[in-house]
Image 1 (tube, rainbow, N blue to C red):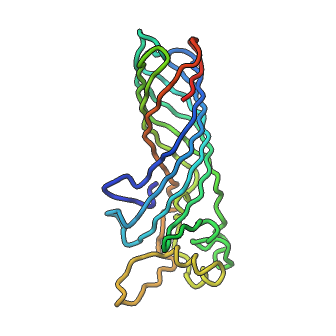
Image 2: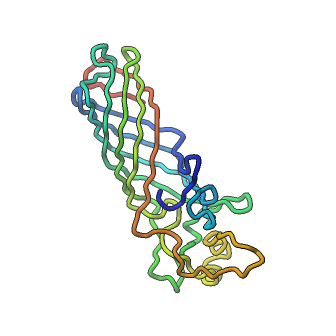
Image 3: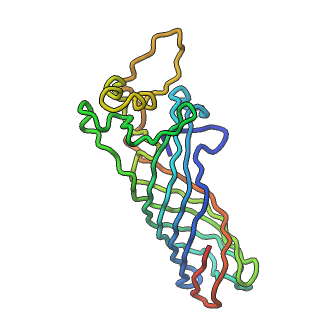
Length: 240
């Protein structure tokens, strides 16, 4: 995502399920409509970059996308003559997200808390963000025919989004007293989870950089798909 990181293991995961409807224009071009349901997550404490910031999140994501696939080789599902092909894809998507953070074994939705001052008079220029955003999906993959009506494919894809709040982190720290008094005490707690030495005075981080508002969020996924061909037709639609 470019904001909350994790080292040593993927800090973002996209899981659960997706459904596709596709139409083959010819042996090279395929149009695909998809519905994805999954989750992304991140954790500063497991990162080599800025772990002391100590922010973490998870967010369920539901996405509807329309993409075009371009097969490098001539390909037809179920064909013995055209059994495999690498491909690239790109398109447009609309997705819904809703970031949460965990505190003392309880999960809290972050948007209603206004952790960067949204909803306060002191930060009236910081408007609540929308939980629905556009995205541009693109990536690469390879597909292979196993038998006449069955094929397998693997793909890696990126999502360029038009929001900077999938992880609820974008700008600078808001004043904790303002958050506590005008929003809720939990807003202040989850806004600044910086680890510091208890024997030293806690630093007021008001206006310190919390995120990077110049870069919107990205997320990626890796998937393996089994495709069943329902009709013996060159332009048949596949259910994945």
